[in-house]
Image 1: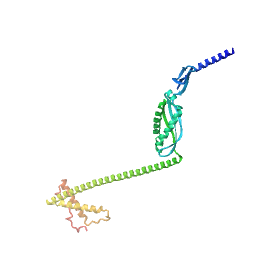
Image 2 (image 1 turned 45 degrees about the vertical axis):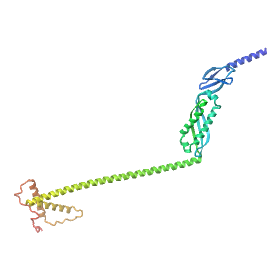
Image 3 (image 1 turned 180 degrees about the horizontal axis):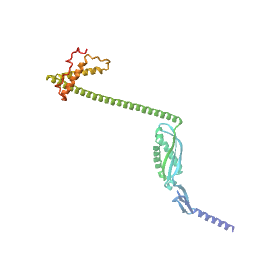
Length: 325
């Protein structure tokens, strides 16, 4: 009886274990590979699945979600022999669970080693300035190389980002001095350019002012010449008219002409800048007589009144220079 009881217990335990081994649940975002006697037969997607107990087993549980790997720091020698410390991060996603499970061993380790090797290759082909200023170029080159290399593994490398590139401390100090010198150089160039532009603008302004001044003097000279020409024409016309009047026997025209010159001479003497005292070398009666002659000519010219019955006004030629002294 004891043997039978033990056998029943063993059978029940076998059945229970077989039941537990005959089904499995695959979580969302995962895929399981199934092996029968060590050979891959199918892939289980999210949900509940039944297996043949003791014959089928779960081979690999693959995470199908996008994953991230931190690339550890490593020292890299650039093209110009500068030693920098570089680290980064990799984003990838498993697309084919079978290939990721059976085409490569230790998938994450393989990806990390591949990325670290290509970081040294890419940065080794660039000098320090390029490696510090062209992060996007480095990331793009790494992504293209690593994604192509990992395609047979059934994964997709979505992004590779360089987190930090750290030059040595002495190199950082030298770069700071270089940057300061470059900024001072740019400042000097900008200052010189500003001075140059200022001088150009000032010279251009002086040129325009000289041109305008010359134009003004040209216009003024032209107008002065025109005024002198008109004055000379008027003077010539007056002289002609006086000559014609004298030729006709009109002595009043001559008196008018002489009186006009006489008054102009007195005016020039009176308005001279150096004149303080005005001495008249002729009598007042002569001046008044000349003015009267001028009025007589004006009356005759405009016909305002008949001058035939009026007495003849004295002229400078009719008065005795000794009168009134």
